[in-house]
Structures are given as C-alpha cells and as structure tokens.
Image (cartoon, rainbow, N blue to C red):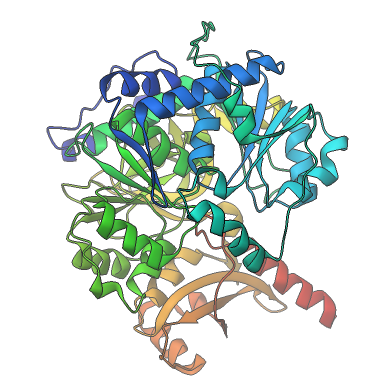
Length: 564
C-alpha cells in the first residue's frame, strides 16, 4: 500500500516547518514542571480577573496529585473530570497526570445515563465535578465504580468580591442552590487542596505505552467509546502544533481558552499547547461573544483556537467594531467546516490569520491544517502535519485512490490513538495495517491539499446519486441572508432520500424558500438542490460549536413516524 504513496504536500511547507520532528519521549506533566522552572512568575492563567503564575499552578497540581495518592489513586487509575473551563480543570488535569493517573474528560452537559455509562466503562475511581452537575452525579454514583467525589464551584477561584457575588448570580441563572453534605468520600475542592503537600513524586511512566487520557467519542453510532491516548500521542500532536505555528514565541503568547477543555481539541490546542508554549491562558467558563471581545482587547490575545460558530458569533455581534482585536495573530478553526466568507471577514476585522484544520478524537485530534503563513486553499482542510501521512482509500479497490478521486480519508502518524478502551474488535475494525480509517469522505488534489466532502454516514443517496451535505452548505453560506445552515437527508418515497436544509438567517434579513431554491440551482446540480427548507432561530450544537446533524436527523425521523 505504501509503494504508491506520494507526499506532494511537502513542497508547500515553509522553511520553518520541518517535514519530520524528533519528538521528546516525555510525559505531559513534565512540560508544566519545565514552565514552572523557566517562567515561575509568568502568568499561566487568567480567570475572570484572577491570575495564577506557572509556579503557583505547578504547586497546586502537586498538591492535588498528593491528595489523590492519599485517597488511593495509583498508577493507571482513571480519574474523571467534569468541569467547565476554570483553573480547577487545569489543576485537576495535571494533578491526575502527576499522580500517575489517567484523565477521563467528561462533558458537564451529560445527563445521568451518559454519566453512568462513561464512569462504568472507564472504571473511574474518583471524579472531580462542578457543583452545578453534582445532583446528576449523585443520582448515579452508587451504580458506578466511584469511590471518591471532589466538588468545586466557579466561585472557588474567583477574586474578591466576585467570589461573594457569584453564588447569587448562579442561583438566579440556574435556579439552583446546591447544598452538599461532605464526608470522608465527598470532598470540597478547596479543602482538599489545602491539605495537599507540595512534594514531587517518582512514578515510572512510559510515555509511548502509558495512557494519559481516555477521551470519549460522541457515540452517534452506539455507546460512546473511550479513545486511548498516550502521553506520546498528545505530546506529539502538541509539538506538531508548536511547529505549525512557527512565528509564535515561547513565553510570549496569550491564548484564549474559549474551547472547552473537556473536548480533545481544546485540551490539545489550548491547554497542552499553552503549557508547552509557556503561554498565558485566558480562561472563559463558557463562550459568550461579548466576553470574548472584551478578553481579546484587555488581555491582548495572540492565539485564538476556535470553531466556526465562535467566529460567526463574534462577527455578528453588534459591538464588534468597538473593540481592538488587532493583537490576534493566529487562529486554527476545527470541529466543523469553516465557510470562506467567515474566514475572510474575520481576518479583515482582526488582521490575523484564520485557517481551517481537520482531525478526530482518535488523532489527538489534529491531522491536517492550512498554512497560517503560506499558501492556503479555500474549502480545503489543508496539508498533513509533520510526520503525518494522509491518504484516500478507494471505495472500489480498497487501495490508495487516484488524485482527485473521492474515497475514505485514512491517517497514520505519532498522534494516532492506541485504540478503543476495552474494545479490541472495534479497534481492529478501524485500522487497515497502520492506517486509521476515519469514516470521512474526501479527496486530495494534485498539490497535496485535502478536501473533505462528508462523513460516510452523513452522505445522502438521492435517486442513486451520492450527495455530500458539506457541498450544499458551502453554497448556501455564500448567500448574503444566510448565517448558518445544515443539510441532511430525509426519506423520500420516490428518490429514496431527498435533501432538506435547516437555515438560520442573519438578523434583519428575509428570504423565501423559492429564492433559496433559485439561488442553489445556479451552483448545484438539480439532484443536490434541497427540496425542502426550514427556517430556524438557531441550530442544535455541541459545546464546541459543532452542529448536531444527528439531532436534526432524529427529529425528522420522529416526524415521519408520527405522520405514518
């Protein structure tokens, strides 16, 4: 299979980006130790007015690690973290790693069923959770392997007087007043930390073999699976990120942490990258366009990894022109396709560079990206990163496809996962030799740039023709009235499936279905043109801003069942 593999992408690499990297065989936590040694007084975190230096962050992580060891956490034990972005999420993450544990990042939006599945599947002994989600965790705790629960609140790391005011705001916003009866197995985070010792521990960890993270996939095709990522996987992908952003300097950057840390994208390109860069992370507990605008201006943010919906939200904010966003130098967009119009508008507003990347949980996550300073192709997911081979697997021959031939995107490289936790058969099913089969459909052009057309499972088959939702969405995004769009396949008695587009319009804009139909017919073959349009105020999304296409599909299926 390798005999026909070509790597035309190297010709586009700038001199500063190496084709291959000599990766350090180190643990993730060693980079925090290094940052604390070299930049002890450098601000590591800024959180709603509170600052924490690298020496303070490292000492806090050590305290947490020693406390975990005191309650029985040993090397290889899984510790779940169910927090919004906050200093506690960074402290917990590195504390677990320093204790020799394996982090299990858990989405705070999970309901009881999802929490119970993830805890039981991972076998987590300890969980750190937000007080807001504690009632959900408490309901399932006795049905899981949890032995200890550590609870914290946003207020715990807020400066005075915000820490006094915040509980009242929380009660007003969420209608919750959390009363917790603490005991020997249920610990308040602050007290737990205060009892910890600042003492380094010698734990023998093999970065290439030992897990750092169990990151669960979305589970759209069944129960969520735990992706096993080693220290080496994550160190490699973070190092690749550093090399790709070659103009940024260690100890000088300010990274906006608006992407959730519980998602592997935010974990790698914000938290791990921030520590490796010895950068200052400006942490926001949730994405709010106005908060982002304020943070960029006041903190002089230089690096803003995000998702298309974040950039769209900022561009559509009525006060965007009132803020100075000129500090922004680089943005890598992931988790969803980046519309070209959004890219050009955002660059016009900030003066920085915004490019689209591509990856999956199984690739730690980044596999490809456009060049920040160099040639980039609109609509492309860019070039493979250093030491990363990307190819197209022909759906017909199951061998490497020809240039411009659509097939399944396959990836191999140091960032590719070890496998799925306790699922050897499912692991085997997604590997062909050393290649990871992504399940995404795409092609490579003659210059080595890759393009994704859609996930195999999202492909629409209308009258025997393959229709890729992304192509339809790209066309509709170009319409001046359209702010967001998602295309899906819905059952059709004649065509098998037909295309339906869910559309969110820009504020103040009006357009009819007939007008959108006529517009699409100028740019799409007739079988690709949506036969139905539905206008909505918003689309369902994940915490990272990725549109939940599956939710829309399920809604349509329920409508069909109700009408039959």
